[in-house]
Amino acid sequence: MGGRLEIDDLHVTFGQAVILQGVTLSLDRAPLSLVGRNGMGKSTLCHAIMGMVAARQGSVTLDGRPLLGLGPSRVARGGIALVPQGRRMFPSLSVHEHLLLVAGRSKGAWTVERVYETFPRLAERRRNGGHQLSGGEQQMLAISRALLMNPRIVIMDEPSEGLAPVIVDHLIETLRAIAAEGMGVLLVEQNMRVATSVSDQVAIMVTGRIATTMPARELEADRDAQRRYLGVSHGH
Amino acid sequence: MSLQFMITVTLNGLTLAALYFIVASGFSLIFGLMRTVNMAHGSLYMIGAYVGFSVFDSLYASNATAGYAWYVGLLAGVVAAAVAGVVIQVVFLGWMQGQELRQALVTIGLSIIIADQLLAHFGGNPFQFFAPDALFGPTPVPVIGRYSTFRLFQIGLALAVGVGLWLLLNKTRLGIMVRAGVDDRQMLAACGVNVPLISVATFALGAGLAGLGGVIGATAQPVALGVDVKFLLTSLVVVIVGGMGSIGGTAIGAILIGVAEQWGQALFPTYSVILTFAIMVAVLAVRPQGLLGRTGR
Ligand SMILES: Nc1ncnc2c1ncn2[C@@H]1O[C@H](COP(=O)(O)OP(=O)(O)OP(=O)(O)O)[C@@H](O)[C@H]1O
Ligand SMILES: [Mg+2]
Image (cartoon, rainbow over all chains, first blue to last red; front, top):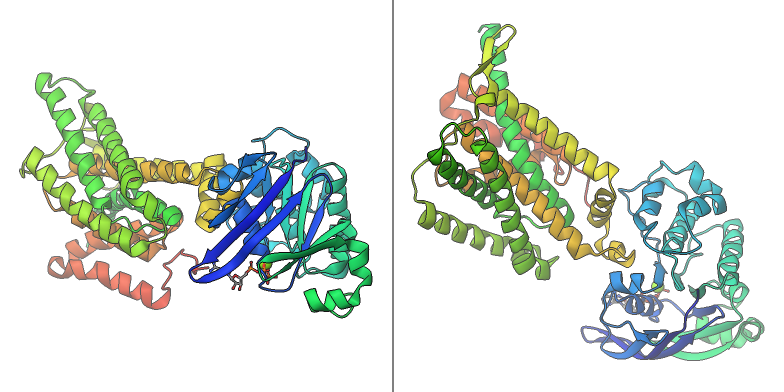
């Protein structure tokens, strides 16, 4: 499990607007967090890696295999799973059907039974519709949907968005456990506490580029950098 | 008005509703997943009827006692329409996914071409299948005495199609994928599902149902050119009344329209056509999304 994801000089434009202008980033064993203000292009990067938006230039490889141009379903089958921003549940499917949709297509540690053991709340609500769940439960389901693909790398786009603080604590535990098992984790976050609790390294995105990558501890201590790159003055 | 008359007219309405349901459920299925308003759906009905009949006719001509001729014709009609549907999806519509106006225009163009080609190859004479012996003649029915066996079969077939579709959509993995695709195609692809393949399968199924309707319709009544427009319009009205993309809604829409059409013809033949549209207008005024339709996301 785990894999080496290399992103090199990635450019994405929407019409005239240049959204990503040369993103270079690599992810190996250790989880990596990516932070940045609203609209800096974090989600666009996630979508470009998955093949959900087209890149104009650059390359993305997983263990040396090029991914650009494959389209989302082949990128997913190639070992990258996305927990999208806003969770994107399927309103027509029950909890259990969300899991059946992705279960059994890949070999690996994650099975439907294991998901229910790990997240007993989902087992209790297996017959409920995805949209009837609370925000925290939806996030668990979105993460389970990704894990069941037994990916080498899971990309999470702002999983803590809109969750209550106690739920965020639970989320942090979950993410750390996933990373500890050896699955690659690229975590996009605006919540500094989540980002720095999950990974030792934090990459900072500013207007479609990686401005810098620094140890999480340093960023935590550097109020000035936080203000400059993230627009937060304290903890957040 | 006698009870016998009322039951007969209602049964006639349900027979018609059964045919409408078979055809419109295919239309609704395709619309639900692909957001494609397939204006060639009536043409797929015609392809089913014409191709099915030509196979049936050649078998029947060589051996009139061949009971299997109708069933083989039915199969041929369904397969021909399904294949035509796959060609339409793969060659024309697949790469303009999401461009609804363009797809509507292309399918209108296709429907004109298909009608002309059918005219050129099969001629313009009306034709009708003979129902096989097992489905021919009357069946005893309480109160009204007897009723056409084939019409009862038609109602049963529609029920089977409805139950089959429900099971497919709710109890199989393909069904889960189709419903997820209705919600969010891109996210479905990001879950590793080959969405274009699901689209082709759905289109084949929807088109096959149009072809099935074509053979059934051409057995119940003679078919001539122009039925493509009639069945396209009926499918549109049924799914607008029932709610786009909902199988249950399609069933309710088909029953309303079919029964209203027969009662209208029985009570005020001159104005019966208006009744269909009056129902549509009334439903749209109260529930623009259709009786069982969900409001747009
Ligand atoms: N499909 C699109 N078409 C045009 N512009 C887009 C599209 N998607 C995103 N953008 C623009 O690209 C920029 C980057 O958006 P993106 O969603 O990647 O930012 P983000 O860093 O994820 O922000 P947030 O933290 O708010 O989620 C924004 O200015 C956004 O308006
Ligand atoms: Mg974002």
